[in-house]
Length: 125
Image: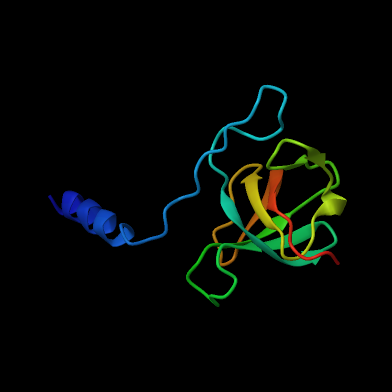
């Protein structure tokens, strides 16, 4: 009975959270997975082979944030299906990121990208 009460409490507590990102439906030749990304947000930091993605950059804490390792071979595409490259990732872009394996449980979480989709371009740098 205690387990059921905990389940109900967690379900009710999570009801007010942001809705999860919607799945992406990709064509047969696309690199974009047909599953939901692990994180969707704004690129707020770019370092060699690493970027920080924040769902709500204006919030210091509480919203999803991730430090994502990005190697030169990671597939990158625009939302419309056009291919891109890691070198085209810029501060301010809106991206969706799928992870290669599990994320490290930290805040921000840490993971390695398997696919990145540029949802909207940010400012050019």
